[in-house]
Length: 89
Image (cartoon, rainbow, N blue to C red; front, side):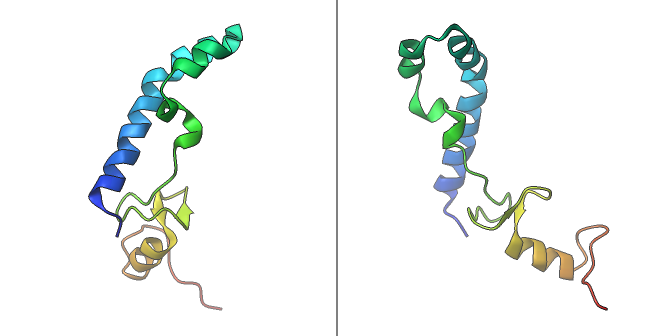
């Protein structure tokens, strides 16, 4: 389980990226790289990292569900994800 501060930092980064997205796009289109350099570094979309919504785990993230593979497996076995069941053949 990730620390709450790590999860909060990621949420804060996402808000910052959304806030500066339009300005960043305009500066890029104009070719103003000096203006881009003056924007906050955390406002770059490259700084974002997908994390599990429940545990905050940074690795093994399943984009379709928004959770990590470990959490997905636990929830799928418990029947908490509709339409997902363990394969057996």
